[in-house]
Length: 118
Picture 1 (cartoon, rainbow, N blue to C red):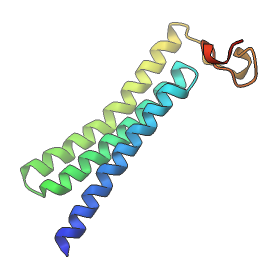
Picture 2 (spheres, rainbow, N blue to C red; picture 1 turned 60 degrees about the vertical axis):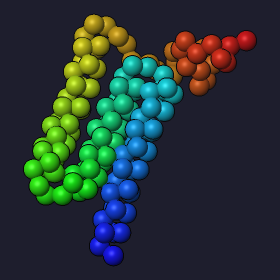
Picture 3 (cartoon, one colour; picture 1 turned 180 degrees about the vertical axis):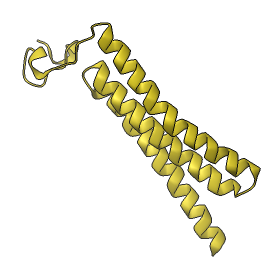
Picture 4 (cartoon, one colour; picture 1 turned 45 degrees about the horizontal axis):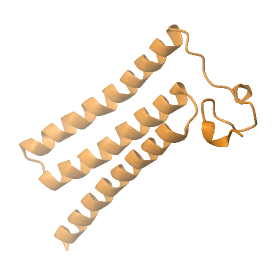
């Protein structure tokens, strides 16, 4: 019974992590500008990888490998949002303007999206 609950928890964490990776990929493809894309990717990437690694750490147990994986999770949760912030700040300092709704020719049009043009 314990083994089944253990495996079920690990499967749930890995599937939830993969779902967050998928959601982040959708954000990368669907959002209109660099800033919203980098936000979606860094948040979902950190959470997705954190959940997958947490599932792996639970699967491996409290031995040396599990502790190293937990340290990796801490490093990931610190570095991914920091890297996203650094990228966004560098883009802003180089003059990349955030997208606004007025940038589209029609309401809801994404700049550079040729699929909706006549």
